[in-house]
Each structure stands twice: as C-alpha cells, then as structure tokens.
Length: 138
Picture (cartoon, rainbow, N blue to C red):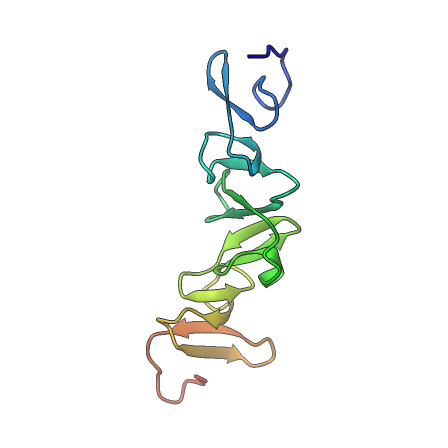
C-alpha cells in the first residue's frame, strides 16, 4: 500500500479511508468522504456524488450518504432537510415532516391514517392511529 504522512483531520488516513488500527487505514464505503468504519451508515462526511447525509438522531456523529432523491428536499422519506446537506429522522409516525417533533408531520405513514392539525395556518400536525371525536382530524 501507499504511505502517507499525517494528513490532518482524518487520523492520518487519506480521504475515503478510516483508521482501523494504529498504523492501518481501511477504505470507507464509496459514498463516504470520511468515516469511522466500512458500513454505509459509518459516514462522517459525504462525497460529492452522494451529498445528502442521513442521520437518525441529531446527536449522532455518523450516518448514511445518499444522492439527491429529487423529492422531499433531497432527503428520503421519513427524514427532513435540517441544513443544506443534512437530513434528520422524522418522528416515528411521520412519512414527511419539517422537524423531529411529533406535531411537525406533513404526511403520515400508512399505519397512522389520521392527521391531526393543531394550527391550520401551518398545515403541520401529528399522525394518529385512531380519530378522536371533535379533535380536528381530517
């Protein structure tokens, strides 16, 4: 293999590689620019062909890199665009949403057919399994 001097912020490894042991760098998944391991979900940053970083929790430091899906602002379903290239997981009942809050759904998953709108001016709501009488469900 090739030898590199300390390359700075990537633990001495070239881009698209991670530090496996003290002096050994292994390749990341091809979607990652930097990573912590070989899996598609170990990406720390994304390469230009898969620029949308999907993470399940805003506190996570690693996620999956995907290409622009041409819908939902570049994020896959059940994720929302939080910054120009980062997608966070929606609340568990939402198919699409604007934040991770339970009342920020814009559409619901099929198992939660009742969309409850608290404020009709923003068209956001929560997704419920059952309708509640006189609660504004649509």
